[in-house]
Image 1 (cartoon, rainbow, N blue to C red):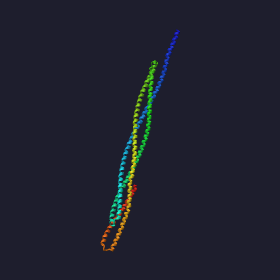
Image 2: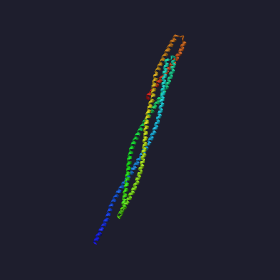
Image 3: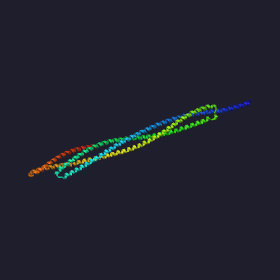
Image 4: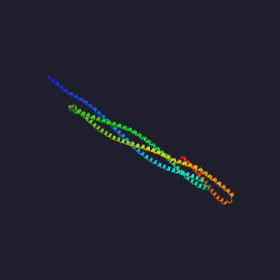
Length: 421
């Protein structure tokens, strides 16, 4: 009996040991599962934090994209405004060029008239040197009157041309000031556009870097998701092991399954958030591509604007050269007036000579009247001639008065020309 009791005691001890060992093993596994549960909860919290950070990054990227699109629209509006201003300035330049061409033609016509008058004055001088004294006075008086009339006409034309040149000079100054201001504004705008372009390039680089970082973050989130799913699969296999289906473990299993379901729910939510973030990232990539395209269009427009600016500078220099060329006929007109003044001296000398010849004729008439009474009829005829000479002399005196008026007008014209220059 005692032997049986010892045997039973040993058997019970073995049975108890066989029961206690699995229970201890289950306790250790339960502790391990609790630790895994805590680690899983921590990883889920970390994953949620990363998802929230990804959402914030996506919102920031979208805000930056909207800002870039707004800047691109503003640049397009500025480019359209600059094109309109360039067209207006081009129309003003064409009108000024046409007006300058007409003015140059009139100056050339005036120069031709001055040369013609010079030739006529030289012809008058030549005729006065070769004609007899009888016909000299009448012809000289007629030609002198014609020359004075032409001189007045040329002087009137010169006054008109001088006024038009003065108006053209004022318009040139205003146009030059406006063009200078326009060129300065264009330079400022181009410089600002270049600065914006440089800033946009830097921001674009930063945006690309952040996009790459965002994509890396997405890959890390996907890797974390796959790792959590793998851990859950391993945990599920361990829980479903038929060798550990004891009643004491059922509660732990149910708890772990509940936590697993919660974790799977969070993973599903994380997967939905991840999918939404991926969709937003794809939309952001599309917006970035559109922004890049708009940026390229802005760069093309900027290049066109710089080319238009260079063309406008060349046209402006060409207009200045044409204005300088237009001043040359005015200088030629001044030269013609100087030559006319030089011709006035010989005319005055010829007038004095005519006066002296008239005095000599009167003296001869007196001597002939005293010596030859029989030639009274001839003397009467000579008297008539002398009366005609006196009339011509009076005409010459009137002509001298006209010449004085012409000289006074010429002085006024010279003063106007000095003011114009």
